Image 1: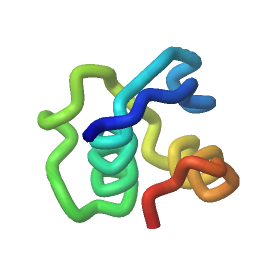
Image 2: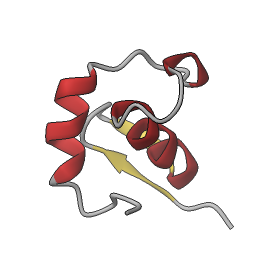
Image 3: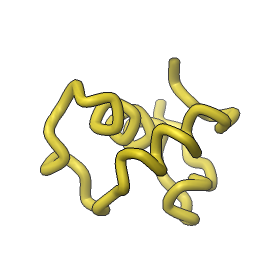
Length: 56
């Protein structure tokens, strides 16, 4: 079952699967086109590394 939470990067409620995808894009493992929202990869690496919801 998917969980929802407030994403500090996007400042909106997202699913945990979206969080995973954001982290995979920021890390360069998958293409950015998979995301609905455009992200700044450097900012994502910084913000997501400190986030309590980071999936890994």
